Amino acid sequence: MGWIFVASLVVALAVTHKPLGDYMYRVYSGVKHNVVERGIYRLLGVKADTEQRWGVYARSALAFSVISILFVYGMQRLQDKLWLSLGFDAVPDHIAWNTAISFVTNTNWQAYSGESTMGHLVQMAALAVQNFVSAAVGMAVAIALVRGFARSRSETIGNFWVDLVRGTIRILLPIAFVGALILVAGGLIQNFADPHTVTTLTGGQQAITGGPVASQEVIKELGTNGGGFYNVNSAHPFENATSWTNWFEIFLILVIPFALPRTFGRMVGQVRQGYAILAVMAVIALVSVTLTNVFELAGNATVPQAVGAAMEGKEVRFGVANSATFGAATTLTSTGAVDSFHDSYTPLGGMMTMFNMMLGEVAPGGVGSGLYGMLILAVITVFVAGLMVGRTPEYLGKKIGAREIKLASMYFLVTPLLVLVGTAVAMGNSAGVAAMLNDGPHGFSEILYAFTSASNNNGSAFGGVTVNTPWYDVALGLCMAFGRFLPIIFALGLAGSLARQAPVPESAGTLPTHRPLFVGMVVGVTIILVALTFLPALALGPLAEGIS
Image 1 (tube, rainbow, N blue to C red):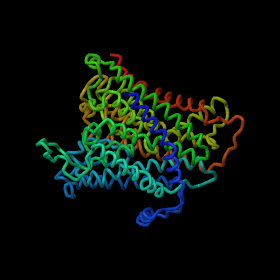
Image 2 (tube, rainbow, N blue to C red; image 1 turned 90 degrees about the vertical axis):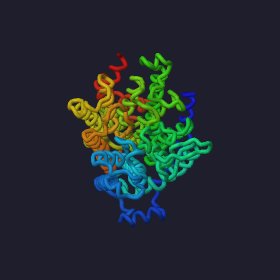
Image 3 (tube, rainbow, N blue to C red; image 1 turned 135 degrees about the vertical axis):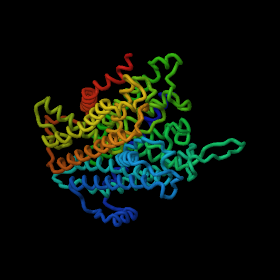
């Protein structure tokens, strides 16, 4: 049944790939603005028909994010004075800082229990809004990079505000509306009651009901965010009621990232290039899902072997296989939602969730961020191939020179630097070590997972480590900020550099980037780069635990 579950997901994603990808192509390539969009542009004072250079585009994205951080932080600090606060106090400064950074960077790391910390207004007006617009920012950056490949002799790469508004209004909101209705039909709760209200049901039974859960659930999955209304996230029956809502949530996590390669192919005028990028994502994703399921179903650990299954930390209504598939999907993307406790996975199963994030979340990755991350890995692959044959590398008719490869290299190096330095600093000071629940390799894995998740803007937690402390809130907040905004700057810089170039005609020596050979090369380069970077850290954590 677990493999049927995976196979049905593959079929559903294959069916939606073309229509959704073509629709997003029309959204970002169209020149007309609808009535709602024109009203938003007037409100913001935006000249929607004026395009921006890459530097202006980047400053717009960063300015929007900074203002969003201040807004979300302010609402949390003033929560006790706001409507629909449910009587909750103002959020402490270090948690408010961490949460504001987390939701604006599309990470949605939560160092607090949502149902006992945030009132409805903060949940909706601050956090849920960021579930939309932070995802739309990632999509905008991806489209800007694609325009860099598609254009020639151009100084502009689009208009950030137009891309942001269109991605939110035309793509995320409509799918979220339909998805919320489906989840409500599946048993999720959607109302404005206190989430701690005890309601007497027919027959005298009592249940805790309430909260705008369904809408936030579909938003978090669709935008690959992961922030949960309840502390146990998608393991809670109000957030994920049945096995088929579990399937639908995984589908929402993957549907946009897997459709964006089609949009890329249409925009560069070569659909087969989009299929090549899709193939790379699909190969890595299928291998990851398979290995995670194998490691969890085999139960190669003392307790699972004793009881016959690795069910610790998993919901009975989902079982081992479906939980492992959810765990792989959420860490292959930047979602961070969980329906099982990753800390309770077998050592090798837990390693797979970490390795998925260490790949840079490119298979298929976050909404937008997965596509621009994969395109930069394709640039690095072309450069490596050029070195092997002794000719100037080219990708999609653009030369990959010194400037381009420097930007691509800096993009790749940001998150490993944050992960490894952050983990080392945490293990080297008393505040970091004191928060660990376990010692030995498993305790090290808890810290490594936390910094991997934050730096890659994933948001899921291994568990075990107490992160709602001032030290962790500040440290992980910095990792989330640098891990989000530095790669965006490098990606947009690369877009600007490519857009200015004149197209290079294909020759007999041009590497075909739409064939299986190139797909295999990108997969190999991605895995080798990650293995060389993170293998020593993994050897100290999950691999050591697995061997012991």
